[in-house]
Image (tube, rainbow, N blue to C red):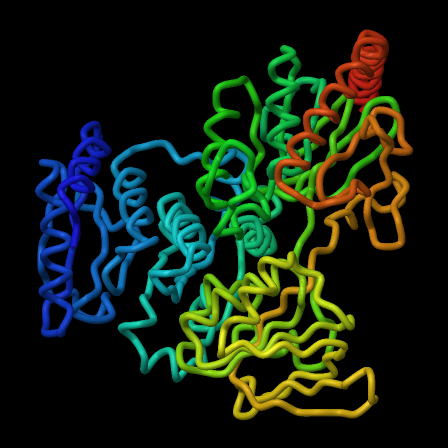
Amino acid sequence: MLTNEILQAVKGYTANMQKAVTFVLQTGEHEKRAELVTFLSDISKQSEHIQLEERDMDGLLRSPISFLMQADGVDTGIRFSGIPSGHEFNSLILAILHASGTPLKLDDSVKNIIAGVKETLHFEVFISLSCHNCPDVVQSLNQFALLNPNISSEMIDGGHYQTMIKERDIQGVPSVYLNGELFANGKVDTAQLIDKLIQRAPPAALNSSDQPSLPLQDVTIIGGGPAGASAAIYSARKGLKVTLIADRIGGQLKDTMGIENFISVTKTTGPELSGALQSHMNEYEITFKEYLRVTEVEGGDIKTVTLSSGEKIFTKTLIIATGANWRELGVPGEKENVGNGVAYCPHCDGPFFKGKDVAVVGGGNSGIEAALDLAGMVKSVNVFEFMPDLKADQILVDKAMAKPNITIHKNVATKEITATNGKVSAIEYIDRATNTEHSLKLDGIFVQIGLIPNSVFLGDLVEKTRFGEVVINEKCQTSEAGIFACGDVTTVPYKQIIISMGEGSKASLSSFEYLMTEGDRLEELFYSESAKESESTEELAIAS
């Protein structure tokens, strides 16, 4: 299962382990157990610090193909049920390294939030080995377990636990359960998981005064996609003090599997390009606030950015690069059936519909690409496009038309998604030419109707279009002095990776130009105001 090349890489990764890691495998019989034993044995042979033991854990582990990890004999709270190969192999290797002492790449405020959780939390993460979003969730929850002994996390390969899949009506991954109850379903990222933990965290965990505050920043960038990364690199190269805040590095890019129009790179994937962006940014002095949301932005000469952790960042300039998210249909039955037949990621959830009938709503590039992707796995694909003509590139349309199991419906409006026994069973739609209603029986619906700008958090601070796009000029300037915007969140036409990168560099250069004339004044203003506040605080303390 593991090639010599992979095993050599494992040997290199584990060369500097600080703690002994033990795989504790539940005893018993299972058709896949021998394969799992071989898999774990091969890994353990690559380091003297990794051991494999087989024990009866008296109900602590789910089945004979379940194992937990110990570090120096102490249970880490990390469990795997199934064989963590495919995309989950990285989750296993990172779990080994983090358990053995490799520092967690989490902001201190995030660590404090997680460590502050007092109740016992057991997470179950149902995954498929073909899902590229699942590892991020597994890896995040594994880190939560390492930070807090009250937390445990179990990866469960749904392919080996079909009874549980049926009992819980799971049709999409990742599907996260907390203490036996559904916690998060469908596409979920680390920031969302942390938001939910923040809701459980004691107030002390959110006390920003306990954290060392950042000095006044020259540039603060909100968003970690292509535009945000480009802005951060350009700004850092100028020697500026730069902070980047992001739900996740890569942003929406991470959900894109095939990229063939990134000039000079014949073919890559979103996760690969996201990793390259992170590596490039790591070459510079950039402060990262990853997995955190911005809850409030205050304008003025000095901008104030408040994070979901309670921290406040003061900055001379601000660059908005928050991108966009999947647009929802907004019809009855959509939200109610997410994870039960309604999906947004064909790469993740397509395998669940093998041999079944599905629909793709949306006739743009993303919709036709999804249809082509699904056509190789499912029985049939029906594409529904609202307009009389498809909006996708002709080359994609031609490919779709050539597929015998793809049917295209144009000039139709989705009316409702219906379900039977908790699972999607049909799509109701209207033929706009004849105004007649139709129903098509199917098992799954993939929504691919474009993106919506992530700009709600800005409120009325800057001018936006009725669609929520931030209005910018040719220099990426917004209606508020010192605030710039770039990428898919803005009015710039053609939402493309390479365009977003160019816009990010423009926003950075415009910010630098602004700082050349206003930077010294803003610096003096900030520290003058800070001194006044300190004096007032001291006077109040003396008076009391």
